Every structure is written in structure tokens, then in C-alpha cells.
Image 1 (spheres, rainbow, N blue to C red):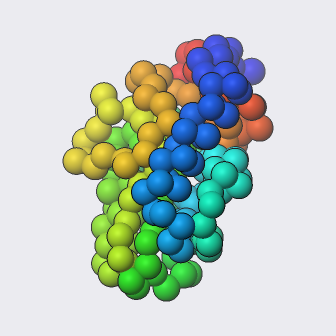
Image 2: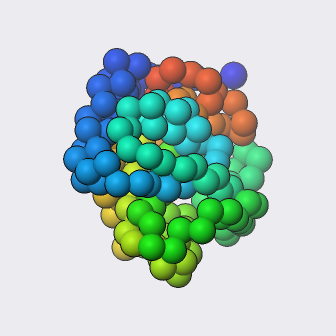
Length: 173
């Protein structure tokens, strides 16, 4: 078992989700929104966020991975499940758990832009700007985190720890 150090608590997460939802509600002004959730790490964030949105919305789930097994550094992207919603002339919000190097979010955003939406923005729970190798900046960020491996609130280490209600740093990774 890995040693975990809590860095963001449940109450802090709930407060930031409230703030981000309020900004999204203001920015879209009740217009319909397609929320594209990047599986699997974003599911808990998705559930909490969309219950706070005051607009008609549809969900689309996409699955992309850049990690495998015990790896802790991102490698080549693999799209496991692609978009199913037609987003032409619609507002799109891409929801991801973490923006690390930016490679995943950059590729997803480029693919969404190619589908000719009315607008596309990105929302992430966590951001590690110190690791960025692609020039991509999420529109909505709940928390900046240091260059440490983190788990909880949907994020995992080798499939474990997604169910933690807080964000923790994993020692020794």
C-alpha cells in the first residue's frame, strides 16, 4: 500500500465545484451545453459539477489513456472511446480530471474543434502547469497542484484510490 498525504479536502473541493459551476452558469447564460467527460478519472467531478449547472445539457463520454499499469509518466495517447454526440454549432465543455503535460487535453480540443462546435472550452479539476509541454490552458481550473502524483476524487494509481473523497499525494511515486 502506498502512503497518501491529503492535500485537498472534501470541503475545499465542494466549494471550488460550486464556484466553477457558478462561472459556467454565468458564461453560458442558460444556453444548451454538451459536456464531454473524459473517462474514467472525471466521473466524480462530472457528477458533482453537472448537478450544479442551470441549463439544458447532454453528456458525451470519451475515453483516452496515456498511462498503462504502474506507469506514472504519460506516454503515447490511445483513444479507447470516441465522441458520439454531434456537436456542430453547439457549445461544448470538455471536462477532464487533470491537465498535466497538456498533450491529452490539446489533442481532445483539436478533435472537438474539427467537429465545428459553436464554442469549446475546457474544465479540469486539477492543473499542473509546471509540467506543460503543449500550449493549452483550461478555461476553468479547480486547483493547481505541484508536480507530484495525486489520487482521489476520481484519479487513480493503477486503478486504485478513485473512491477517496479528497485529493492526496502518493509518496514514493
